[in-house]
Image 1 (tube, rainbow, N blue to C red):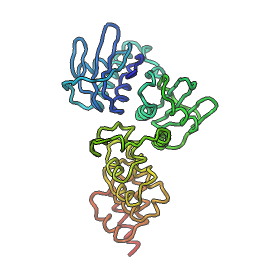
Image 2 (image 1 turned 45 degrees about the vertical axis):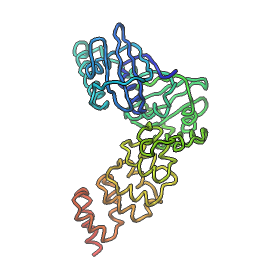
Image 3 (image 1 turned 180 degrees about the vertical axis):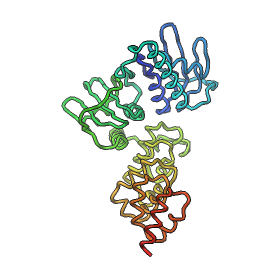
Image 4 (image 1 turned 90 degrees about the horizontal axis):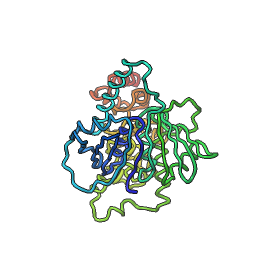
Length: 367
């Protein structure tokens, strides 16, 4: 098989589109619902065209997403396509959610008992060319409680995502991280993802980004593949730009300094977190990242949580001066700085006022 397919249970096509775009695939998503048929054309991380029997472009795409039952499948996009959609896929999905909400309100107004059961909201499919790492990342990005049930030749398993983080996993007699890593090694099978409130005891405490980077490290050890060698004659920069996000994460955890310097500027939080988790990252790089105003807040928080990095004065100073550093962390770090840095912060127009005032108070105490 060259793609994946599934049955629409509840407008789960939004989730499928997210998966395709996040994985930077190039394919056609074909959807059938009753006597209706539609196609969405995806290139890299953009929906470039859509069509039904009656509509074209954005209208067609939003119309397809409102279909509440039917089937979908994907196939490779080989031919060239003339783009008819210019809006980012994130905007399109937000618009689809808004329209769905309007329809749901109309149904409730007509019949108070017609509301849908949230436990049935989800999507299903086959694990063919969809890495489980992509699925977990997709579900985590929704920032709600999801139950991912899986079945393969290995057996049956489940992964619980609560508020955007992996919190529990079960595979046979295994639970927690051990079960999660075993499950993520699967190459095929079926999956069902559905909304499901989690009120149990968490067996996994580590951040999802850490779990995914550990999975990809294990995959690298098994495959022995060198991503840079596969690039061949293509230029370094072009190769990185063409990579899927999961490939970037893998390279971020194993690549050299040049790779890390480029990938830390990637807009994906997961890629940035993978860079900071690279065991070969140097103190000089950490100082530069702590100074950066383009990295995600979570990256700065991860740096601040490291005892080793907090022993480095330049790191503490950089975090205190960075306006993206969480306020409680910056306030604590200001107390550890020398007078010359306190003067700079107290006069800075980029740091929050609370940080500048804290620096002024600390400076008066030192004088």
